[in-house]
Amino acid sequence: MCGIVGAIAGRDVVPLLVDGLKRLEYRGYDSSGIAVVNGGVRRVRRTGRVAEMEAAALAEGVHADMGIGHTRWATHGGVTESNAHPHISGGIALVHNGIIENHEQQRERLQALGYAFESQTDTEVIAHLIDHHLKSGGGLLRALQAAVSELRGAYALAVVSRDEPNRMVVARMGCPLLVGLGEGENFVASDVSAIVQSTRRVIFLEEGDTAELTRDGVQVFGVERQPVEREVHVSDVSLASLELGPYSHFMQKEIHEQPRAIADTIEAVMDEAGFVPELFGADAAEVLADVSSVQILACGTSYYAGLTARYWIEGIAGLPCSVEIASEYRYRDAVADPRQLIVTISQSGETLDTMEALKYAKSLGQERTLSICNVPESAIPRASRLVHYTRAGAEIGVASTKAFTTQLVALFSLTCTLARLRGRLDEATEARHLDALRRLPGDIQHALNLEPQVRAWADRFASKHHALFLGRGVHYPIALEGALKLKEISYIHAEAYPAGELKHGPLALVDAAMPVVVIAPNDSLLEKVKSNIQEVRARGGEMYVFADADAGFGPSEGVHVIRTPRHVGVLSPIVHVIPVQMLAYHAALARGTDVDKPRNLAKSVTVE
Image (cartoon, rainbow, N blue to C red; front, top):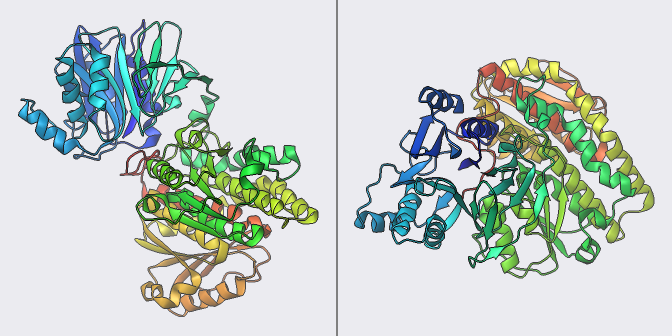
């Protein structure tokens, strides 16, 4: 982990590497470095921000027409310069995303061969292994291919050598890696945002691929080490989407981009004037026609989107639905049902645990697979039979916002499509749901207009150490998401519970120092939630309630209320997540934390 960029060109690539690493900062990292080939291999590494490494490279006058760069998120070994990438062995340097599972055995073997280790990383094992094979002759590409055949785990690799100053070699297994095609120059990156300033023409490497890059061309080799042709894609990532513009942070920008992101995501539904299977793929009608149940697999925020969808799928489509954390599903003996629809949700499309869960489901014979994802041509959509892209645009902030709400929109569209195929969605109900989707961007904007009130609450939260979030029914997952956002970026410990569970233990935590946030829209469970609020007030707790204008209660002593303009019915969870996102953002601002790059976290989690 966590970001890779490389370039071979007829110009100084150091500025390209530094700019690429800066564009990868959103993924989360704790150190960075570059290595270039110019007569020999020169390396610059620093802990902390890319800017510190950039200053060191400038001070040392580093320049070359080929090089690699990396931002690291620590896995094996602490945050030290010696553990930072690139790693060097003999005349080669490499950068690596992923985790090597058999690194200890390989380390022992290499030490016996006389290699000395300078870091605690699994990556240094790969560097020494390539150097070992390079001594057998055959060149850098063959040495890389021999080395990766002895590795177990996940990796994306970019390697350069002082002895082959006109070529770079790369490899991919389980972690994203793409090649960018330029004119008289070529690039490699873990994310297209790192190279979009130089090219939009990219090749997405597939599992087990290796490739050789020169200034004049790229040759890709498949698992069998034979040359293969990979499709060239033209990326639609916008440079503007990677810039802050008038906003202070990317998270703030992305919170405010949600009306547009949702409008873009529902566009296909509106174009079709209904919930049709073709929204999910050409053969979706066949795949979805006689589905017996739905299994949703996801991690983190995407998991909470799945929990919300369970209420819709069971209540509207009438299908049994289970939701499971992907990293748990892949390690249990699941009972396979070939008629079950497997839905994987991932913002990046590269989440390793979710990808491996999908592979496990398919190994059980479950071929009805659907991916909901924000990144076209990423690994999980490519491995799925059906795909629905959320069209949220680039999301830079580590804490997901617009990706979450667009996932909910996609899941609601799936629910209504399943309901229609099962004869449970009449024309009048479908029309109401379509109208609710049309109005949703405006409803989101109304919720965004509550920001001054939410900011005032956040100032009170800044001095707190703990918080409780409560919700009932379909809004309980929104409470979970609110608690996650608060702890992710403000570092305030937060827990979420179904409000009815208070009396079964969590009520013992409530006192005047524990703020309690309640999601309380005007739905069928409102009166139950009001009773739960009284339970908290009786114990001296201070309540912060997100309600609707027609919820029928207002502020009182110890009870603070912010109302959205109206209750929006079945789509209420999508509207009510907006104020909890803003609460987390402004609480983090008040505490002075790094909003976009919270400590210890990464955006694209490509390790187990």
